[in-house]
Length: 182
Image 1 (cartoon, one colour):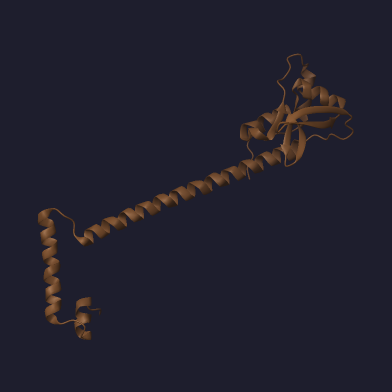
Image 2 (cartoon, rainbow, N blue to C red; image 1 turned 30 degrees about the vertical axis):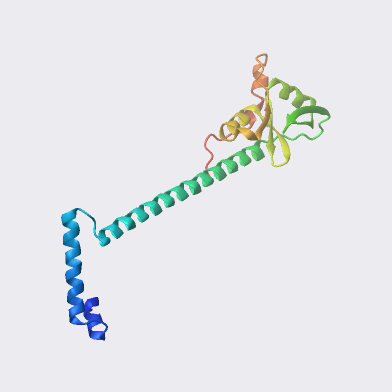
């Protein structure tokens, strides 16, 4: 069975019975005097201070968790955008026509086929950047990417109204999932 600190100090010879009694009465007096004057005792002040520290630490933890969640969300959006670009990128093989556009206040040049050039100008295709590479994408895919991360879409012309139904449906072969899950 454990004894009180007072008893342990007396048994070890570090305090006398009189000193223990004096400490006990002075502690009682301090409490009674603080209660009468409306002041807080040292013990109550320390308890309040510890409570404030716990509250501040909990607030800091919540802020850190929020930042970590924001970072996780950003990485998830980046992965979704990357997957959309990689799965829907169109090949520019055999491109002989120059298409010039502005990127980072610089004029860039891209070689595309004549058909792709016409579709770019009509708004059926868009340009996106993936790392250092520029990629051609169908306009609907570019719209989905722009919803998630607009700075990836480099150029997308407004859709022209003089398109035939066949020209508008050329991208129907591409499956675009509405709800990407990882």
